[in-house]
Image (cartoon, rainbow, N blue to C red; front, side, top):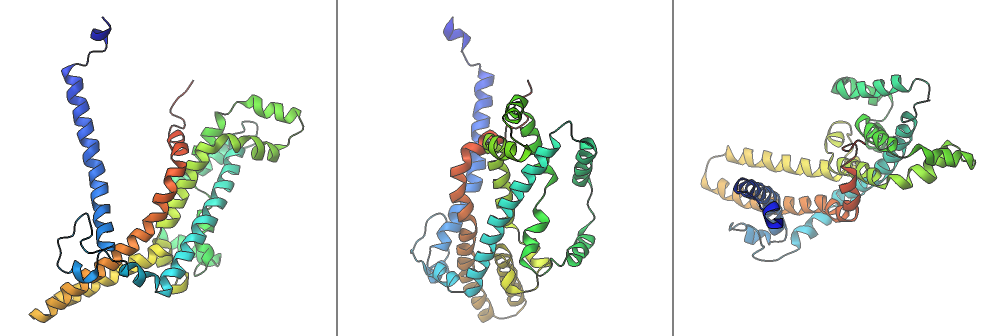
Length: 303
C-alpha cells in the first residue's frame, strides 16, 4: 500500500524530465558563455587570434588583466563603482526601511494617501528630459552624487519592505513600548534585526543595480574621471564596434588582416574587463543566498 501511494505515474515522470531538461538547458545557457568569457580573458591575445577557444584557455596568460589595471581610468572607474555601490546601497536600504516602517502603521494620519502616492510613481514617470532637467536644477549632474541621491528611494522596494514589516507580530512593538522604547528604538533594535531576509534582498537588488548601471554615467556625467566601471566598459565596446565598422568599409586584404588582429585582441581585453565587473557580485552572492531565498517568499503565504 505504501509503495502504491507514492508511485509516480508516467505523466509525472515525463513532466519531471521536461522540467529537469529545461532547467539544465537554462543553466548551460548561462554557464557556457561565462566560461567562454573566462577562457578568452585568461588566454594570450596573440594566441586568441587563431580562434578555437571555447571553454578553457589554450595558452594561459594574465597580460589582459595587467593591461586593464595599468590604465588609470580603469582603477578610477572601479573606485567610483565601489563608492556608489556601497554608499548608494547602505543609504537606500536604510531610508527605504524607514519609509516602509512608517507606511506599515495603520494609525499614521494619511497613510493610505501616501501609499497611493508612492504606488502612483510606479505607473507613470515624467520621462528622460524632465528627469534630466530636475537633476540639473538640483545641481546633481556631472557630480558623483548623481549616482547616489536619485536612487535613494524605490517605490517597489518600499512596498516589499512594508509587506514584510506587516507580517511581524504587533505584540513585539507593544511590549517594547511598555518598556519605554520609542519608534526609532523599536525600528533599530527590533524591526531591523528581524528583517534580515528582506534587507538582504533589497540590498542585493540595489547593489546589482548600482554596479551594473552604465546609463547614468553616460548621459548625466561629462567628466571622464567620474564615470563608473560599467560606463567605461560600455564605451570600450562602442569604440571597438565603431573601429570594426570603419575598417569593414575599407577595401583591401591588408585592412581585413588588421581588422581580425585588432578585434581579437580587443575582445580579450573586453572579456577581462567583463570578468572584473561581474566578479564582485558573484563573490558576494553566496554569503547572502540564504537570506535571499527567504526574502523572495515575502507575501507569498497568507495566514
